[in-house]
Structures are given as structure tokens and as C-alpha cells.
Length: 587
Image 1: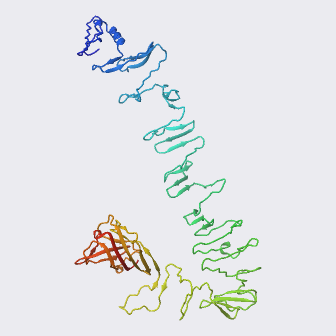
Image 2: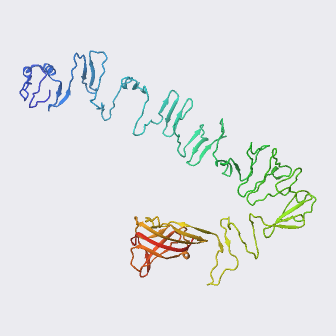
Image 3: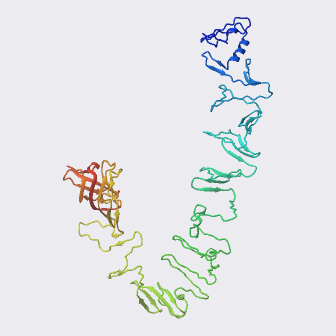
């Protein structure tokens, strides 16, 4: 014992020296020390062990307590050490092999805390086991660290699990994942199989390369998927390689392309020739029709021997099949020369060539020669008034125009009457043009375009607003009418609100059906035909005008000596109401 307190004196372990004990302060039955005065300390300790199960500190608080086991043969040994060596707490006792158990209370942890730069060292070939079966173990042989598990090994962390550069994770004897601070390498003695319940995602601008020269690569840039090869790209499959409808294969700079649409039509596009290097091309199989078409304004040319006159193009039908040549829209079938060796071309009855047969042909200009035989050639041609003219070869005969209508009609000094149906202008950008001299009787106006391109009627949905915050519109008064004739629009309506919302400052009506022309000469407006729910001085007038290059009307109050000012949201109450009507010019 070290310190003399007010309750106990210090003892000396040297036999024969003074050893005094002071009676405990309570003076009770616990005064069991008196008989050991001038007694050796070992004897005293033995007496303490017999009467106490703990060691207390100077404040009589527990430092260590002891639990005795009947017939105990094993215990803890504490060994001190000389300079440079560690002291030791070890199992001791009669048994040959004795475990050392460190147990925490309740849910407490067992914490091993080394010095600031020290480690918790487990000797080589000694491990740390988890659970009682010993199947889960971490052990080192001074070279490798082995982590064993009877089941899975789960790595759970709040950050990355970092494996150093040039150190990998191996699987079996030949499969390995390793990084060198730049590349990540997956090595396998067999296949590398990627199995996932969702996609395996490769970032944009990062690809998969094949072989060591990096010439063969698959990569995406978030838009296109590029497959590069230093040689051929071979597609090998046990079934079809399917491309979606309207997705094609391009060759070169996107100008040569093969593509199919949703109707199973295949299109071959090229800015030059499309050469089919085979003796025979079959178009259409089974019950499907074969077709060669040219889109846009391009011609479809069937040529032989690059334009030389030594080849033949043969168009042949199957058994009891037809050959149909049908132009698009107003296109024509132009045949400079037809030589029919046998049979006939049917469809208009029988068609005979202009320079064939024995009949007389005098009406050939702008006409088609038809007939039922070589001696009965007949011509048809359009008349000036929309009629169809026919001829037997010498005399034109007139027939009424077809009931379905006429095209390219021109008339002089005659009215045109449509007895039923509509007068339809079917081409965008076309209209009704008024000819003759313009009316210059008034103020010598500058005459502009004299074609009426458009007529339209409909409704529009205005909103009263400060430009950013809309007032709540009354659903019974939130729709107006408009009529558009050419480039002039007339709007009208009665509009009412039920709440100001968050509107402040200048007040507008938004939602004109067409944008006002971006021209000072296009300004127009008017005064309200009626209004209510305003908070303005009696006698003031509310007016409006269409804002240039916008679909917005500005509301104005004539309340200043110099003219009008912008109507404020505070001057339009929650149930404000206005009736408007004016015309304006559109862009």
C-alpha cells in the first residue's frame, strides 16, 4: 500500500518493521485488523482476500472486484517487465490449455486501444474468429491475410472500400480484378460473365475495346453508339439482326442509307448510284407486292450498261400478274418509244402508238391517241373551257366537263358559279388575287399585296394580369370571339374576374389569338364599350391598345392632364369587368 490517509496507515513489506493499522472510522464490527499489527504483509493480504471481494481506491470507490469460483484451478497472471518489454496479462492455472475471455457488460463493447502510433498485433498463424463455430476467421501467416467464412463475406462501409494500386482481388486461381491508378483490369482464365437484374451502364465517352491495339471498340457519347474496327465488323447470329422501323444503316457521310419504315417498306438512299452487283434482283415475295419508288423530287431511272444502247431492261409479270406504272400527284408516265411485240397495254381500252396502225392521225399535239384497233385511232385533248375533246382523227368533238370538277380553269367574260360544295384553295400560301387597277381615288395610297390568303374564325381565352401574376377569371366571362381576314384580326368579348390574386402594378389583358405586327403602323386600340368594378374617378375613360410584336393589350386610364396612364391593379377590383372590341394587324 502506498498512501497514508486519515483512515489507514501505510504498511512496509519488510518483516519486523513497524506495521500499524488504524481502526475503521465507524468503529463497528468491521474492526478486524487489530490482530495483525506487526504481522507480515502477505499474511495481511491473505486475511483481506478472505474477507473482501474488491479493491477500492482512496475514496473507497471500487477499482476491481473479484468473483470467486468454487474449487478454482485457473486464474489470471499479471507479469511486469523490465525496460523495453511489455507487461503481460495471461491465463494461468493447472490446465494445460486455458482460454482468456474478455467480456463486456450488457451491450457494451470490448475495446482494444493501442498507443498513438502502435498496433493491435495478432501473431502469425493466429487468428481472430467470429461466432462459436470458428468458421468465420481472419488470420495471417506473416505473408498473406486470409479471411474465411462459412457463408458470405459482406463489406459494409459509409465510404469506399479502397484496394491499393497494383493490388487486386483474385477469384479462384486465375480470375482477378486489379487497378494501377489508371486502368482497371479484369483477368479470367475463361469467360467474364456480367449478370445483373438491370442494365450494365458504361459512361458516355468510355468504351469497350477488344484486343490490345484498341482498334476494335464500342463506345457511346450519350447520343450515338459507335462500333470501330481495324478490320471487318462481322455480325453472326442464329436468327435475324433486327433494326427498328425508321432506323437505318448509313454508309459514308449519312447520305447513303438503308432504312425500313413501319409499313415494311425498305428505302435505299444515295447521292450517287445504287449498284446491285448480281444477275437477278427479286422484289416482293409470296403475296406481298414488290415496289421500287423514288421519293422527293428525284427521278427514278432504270438504266442498263451505264447508259449504253447495248443492254435491255425487261419488266415481266408473273403468271396472270399485272404491271402497274402509276405516277405521283400530277406526274406523268413519259414513254418516248414503245414497241409492243405481242399482246396489248390495257387500262384505257387499247392504246396504240402515234406512229403505228393504218388510221389517219392529225390531232396529236397535247393529246393522247387511243383506239380499239389499228384502223380506229382516236385522240383526246383538254378544251379551253375545261371540256374534254375527242377526235376520230380529223374532227374534234366536245363533251361536258367531268362532274368531279375541273383544274387549270380560265374563263373570259363569264361568271363562275359553284352550285354545290365549297371553293377550296388547297395549297398553303395561295389565295384569291384581285386583278385590275387598284383603287387610287382616295389620298393616293401605296398599293401592297392584293391577294387574300386567309379567312378564319374562332375563340380566344384572355387573362387579366400584371404580366407575371394572373387574376382569377370568372369562368362565365373568360372567352372572346375572333375573325381573321387576311392579315387583319377582329376580336371582341366581355371579361370579368373573381379575384386579383397577387397582381400588382400595371394591368394588361393577355392572350390575343395572333401576334400584333412588329410595326409602328400596326398600332390600334379602342375605348371600353362598358366596364364595372373599377376603382377610378368618375368621368375617367378606360381604353386599350395592342402591344407591338406581342399578344398583349395594355389597359389605360385617361386620368392625367397630358393624356393616359397605365391602369393599375389597385384600380381593377376583384370583380372587375370590361367589354372590348377592336381590329388589329398581325405579323
